[in-house]
Image (cartoon, rainbow, N blue to C red; front, top):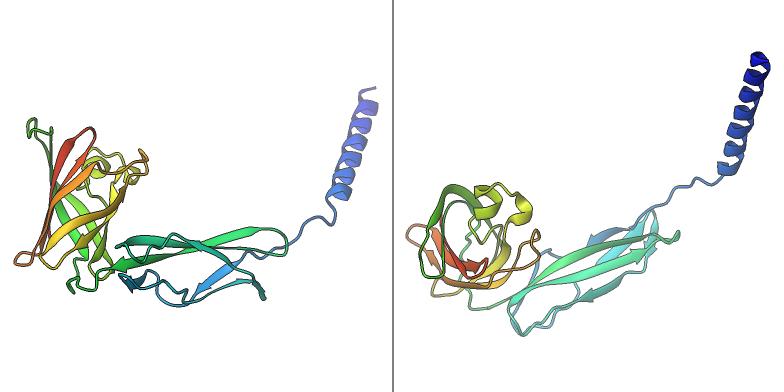
Length: 231
């Protein structure tokens, strides 16, 4: 009896596998997602007051050129960092996207490059300067994205991301602007881990003699983060 049941079981499994093969037969396929080719720089810089003109973009899926749909939030009358978004859909209905950063800059901005990796020191205090909590020997990277415009990978000097070891999601990223008097001002800021930005940014300065940077960032309920960067 056991032998009969074993034979019947094997037969059922054979029928099941055969059925699965027939159901999946011919349904696998290959698709090519859109690959975007951007003409011009990325980031792309334009002087304040100059209308943004698309330098060119192409989307290819294999050998097929696809229609590209674009949108942007560029305000050419406001110094800042903006995004142009591109999307395309292949013949099988699969979407792909890409983007270009557009920097609107002050034509009077100094031709100074602050790019580099800095050693960071940060002292966090209450709004009145009490209860100092220092971190030294951290690091912050600065990248030039346009004339006088720079990306900073942590405007809190690495306080949470490195000092407390929270990780990159808790680095307060942002863009700052260098003016001809060597002051630094905030364009935008964002920390993905908490989904918000700085409450204030002040006393920003570049010291040409030492190459150092400094500023104060206000965050976490008016706490002050005094940041100094040295190379």
